[in-house]
Image (cartoon, rainbow, N blue to C red; front, top):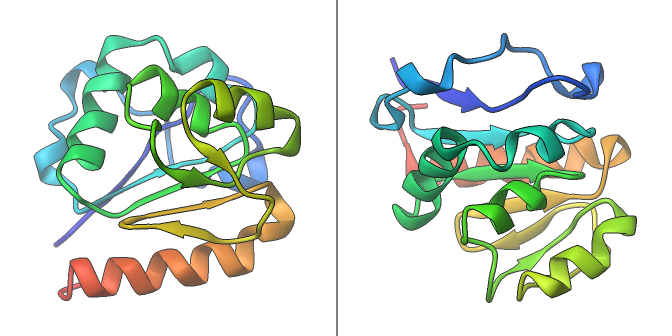
Length: 142
């Protein structure tokens, strides 16, 4: 059965996290068809973890579905996978997105290839609707 990996940690928004914290060292990303990185402040805390960066690069460089929200672009920036992309983020992160070489878009469900992003929890319906569409097209068994 295909699985979706959610990276999270301390200070995550409880509304955005419905999955237990992963023991990142033991995670083989090849066992997952997609990646979801919820927002809140957790991305600030996990972005410098080498295993988080390894997992993010696997999905982004492998053209696999990625949904990221709120502060999650900080993780993609730290992994070196945000430059040249269009992304939504929590509005206060617009300067961080730009500094990482990406284009900040103030939108509810911004699609850039296999990645869909949103600003915060009010974007959940549009963000997840677009992610499910990408997931179905990239992983038809889901």
